[in-house]
Length: 152
Image (cartoon, rainbow, N blue to C red; front, side, top):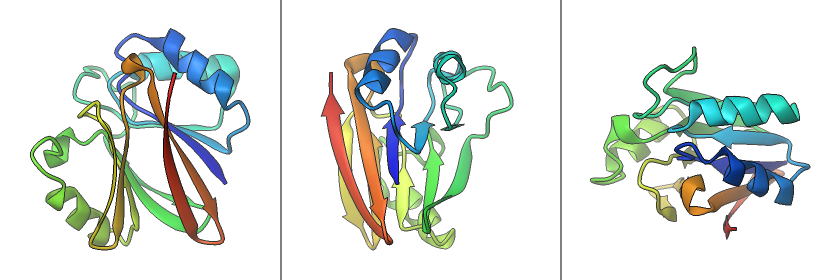
C-alpha cells in the first residue's frame, strides 16, 4: 500500500496538485488539516481515494473530523492535525493517545516541519507543509511500515 500524506496547504492547492502529479498512483491520499477546502477541491477534481482531517485553521470543517483511526492494510494509524495534542510542545500526549487506540503509527501536521521518530513503539510522522512544498510517503507491506519525506 502506498499513501501520500500532506498537511498545511494554506491556500496552495497548486502545490498540492504538483505533489500529487509526482505520485499519481497511491492507494490513499491523506490530508491532515489547515487547508480543507484545498484538499476537497483537489481530491474531488482528481477523483482520489482520500481521508481529510480538520486543522486549527479550518474554521468550517465541512463535516470532516479532527481525528480518526484508520486501518491501513493491517496497520492502525491515528490521524489528526496535531493542535489538539499540543504537538508543538511535545509528542508524548499524542504518542500515548495512539497507544491507547492500539495504533503503531501517528500522523500529524501543524508544525510545518518534516519529522519522523519512533516514540515508545509508535512511529510519529509529520509530512511537513504543502505550502512549503513538503509531503510524505508511507509504504506498508505485510505489516512493515516505511516512511519517507519529499520536497518539490
